[in-house]
Length: 141
Image (cartoon, rainbow, N blue to C red):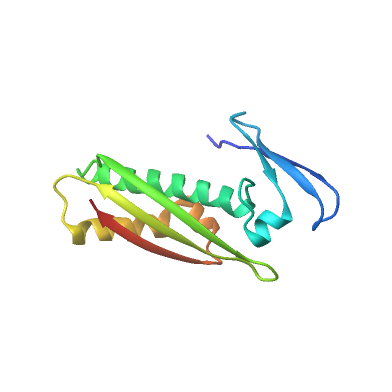
């Protein structure tokens, strides 16, 4: 069964002087202010499409890695995943860097690295980001 998730942005004004809010409609969990200045200059306290994309990528990757590890008999105690998504004005989204710190009992660093790389290639958000560079730093705690 397919699941469709929705978010809505309400924008006022021009790109450079305008402002908006993005709400997570499906979960009704949050509403975020958005501005071009935050996106292009890194203004604190205001989210960006790239931050939201990073949230999606880190959550998706965490689920994919957990599923693969558990299926192979290596259920993780914990996975901490940060996705740093880079935006270059005039160029667009240029990459996503996954930083993973995991506690997985009874697995070698080499085997863990193989699972981590496979999850990077195969999580659905990574597939959606196929047009940009996706890099990975994965370590066992």
